[in-house]
Image (cartoon, rainbow, N blue to C red; front, side, top):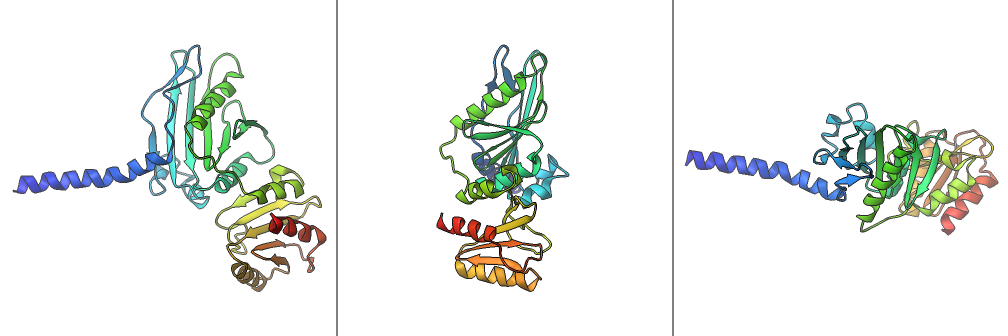
Length: 273
């Protein structure tokens, strides 16, 4: 009876441990067994996965940052061929496309060269490209011999396979496109799903640099009542240049005291959308 109980305990433990990893694997589409050609790179091991509680095992110094941006799972895959060419990928499921955009923008900044590939946005880099696709953020590690353009071909081939396995391809909010058009540069628009301004504890939202060089912020809340409460809270923390319409708030930390026409124009477009 004791042996039977011990066996049952082990089986229960194994089952309990396997459930979260099975659920986690479902968040990441099936990854290709091979990519590229002449010669193709083959996946060298099973895809490894982590959840928010243990992803520090793979990205020790970044785990807390990734969780603040909304990461729900992390997967790692590596490919290699007999010539020694190597491609490794971190894939983060960020829940929402706007969370993935926020993390991508944090890493990409405005200094690199970006290009579009199918539905993905890719930050071009010979050794460490990044990519944004729906709710997924990708970080690549490329090490190949010969043609320097081969790394891009491998990244694009991987993304093509990944995209083909997606059943749902959610898009970014229309608010983001409006702000890109109003910012000094489209790459100046950032998003944070926790606090767009930690000093004010402002909650999630966008921040960008305007054509005048000033920093602006915007939050879209779930209801007009929630927007008003958040605006009152920001005012109580000393913010003066703030405007509320419907369920959206826009503000500027510079002490202008009166909302400018620029703020009015953006807020109207966001609400009308």
